[in-house]
Image 1: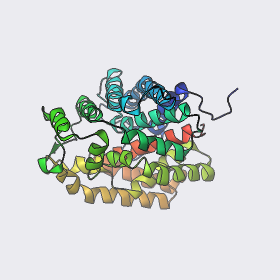
Image 2: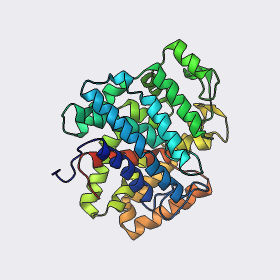
Image 3: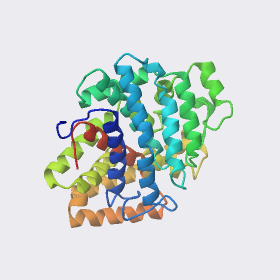
Image 4: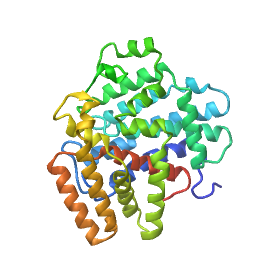
Length: 335
């Protein structure tokens, strides 16, 4: 019989991926984002919930391929990480009508699912250190084909907030019809694409750093709030706030900056000041203990009104919160 909190195989990894997305989604009140009491236009709570479940089969397949690699039956370069990300993005969109809801989280949880399977295949216990090392090895083995598949995934997600990439940015634009050919000609692997785009994209930076923020900021906040308040909901919201207080949310910055320029990374630069203000407000709410107190909840309500009045949401920090939860679930957390 398995010990409580023990991850035995790929099926458990799948549940962790789905549950992390659902728990992050349900945490309320997360200022500016979807939760059980608030939607974002056509991207409703129910549609996000559908997307949370729909990514499960790909997380399962990712963990299975990682398991095979860990057993020496599949080369890491043949895991096809990029195609798994593309599949998850398409499955998310296939099970509800508002388009891909979890693109940032998919970019984090699919490699993490492979990494968990890899560690299991090698007979290693899932610790944070082991998972980070496995993510790093997986990305080091990534290929140009993986990069092309990521581009297809981003196109499938059809985000209106990507903007147009300047040629001097060092990467082809996602919507350039010759993007894949350019990636191949220049020999750009998935890891190299992530490293270059890390300059203006928080999710790319997090993956390229093997989940540094989730491990060093998200997990301590999650565990500390659980110990202090005993409420997973409070812990989820306050982890989100802690991440937002720590970093400038590039999803928010890009959305604001695109109102002034259609080019990237210029748009993120244009939006950094308002992203800093979101971080400041998150810090102020945390000083009042965030979702744990009446005063904190009032601060969150005001912050939520401010963000929604500007049609802005710190989506990258929501993705980081979900990834933090997945790491915690893989290493023993149970709601």
